[in-house]
Length: 346
Image 1 (cartoon, helix red, strand yellow):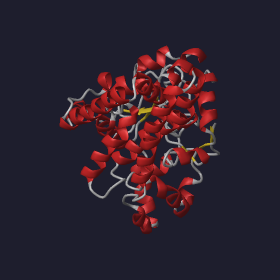
Image 2: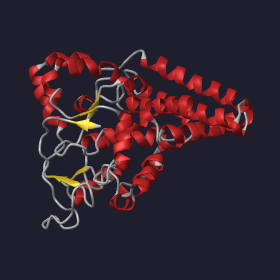
Image 3: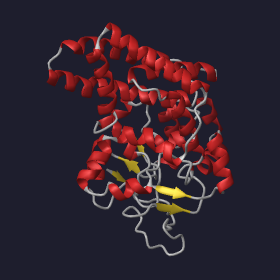
Image 4: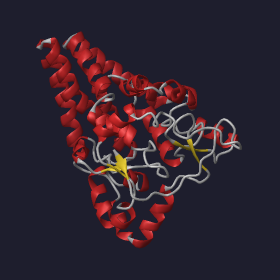
């Protein structure tokens, strides 16, 4: 559940006809904003009042050890789960594998902001390592799209974190929203091909080669059930899983007027504090381990903002509330077609 006593207002505008306002925001149209994304303004205000926040910038030297442990756990689990019964196999893939692989997805998120090492190249190479147990090459492409999500939050034709209008129309009922949540990983993988297609670069091919080599090694040494465990872990961990609640909690409009929400609960330990999402968008160059300190320093900026109380309840409310759908996102159209075309070339 996400709630707040107060929130800034977002102006609403129908996508189908930007002058008639026939669409109902959150139900059959998006929430539309006339302004640029809100985080840059708050970042300037916080830095002006608390310049010591800059001391939090940089990488987390302990991060690489956590990621290495997660990769090791998943390889060990892939070996062990081959000998388990079907129900233990699925339970292990959900509880242990799903949690570990989702953490590795969020590790790639940290590395996309160069928060694991001082040098960008080291972050890029390590992201390839973090990607291995996930089974599907995604680290390099994720970085390209995710940095645009930060810079152009909600922009039409750029921000692929926003569902398409087709998704909004199809996934309206409780059952269809359940399917949407269960299969979010496929939408995140395929949506960029339709919304903001990009030509793969050298590092995408390197990423693919690393994953294919790792997958082949798992198949050859441990067999198909070990590989299936890793893939199933990725699927279950990105679907109806407590940690995956952050997918919905971060930017879906549960409180009208707010487009980013933070979560400060215990599940942050499994997500490198990705729940501190307003803080992260304001300062993407601060590692997750230091975001609680940012909130403590600038409490008067963050305490009044809407908060997510529970990732689990967010999933439940999203699926069951008829007033919330894939349309419950804030969009903006501040870029020209030429600017969008240039961004797609990057």
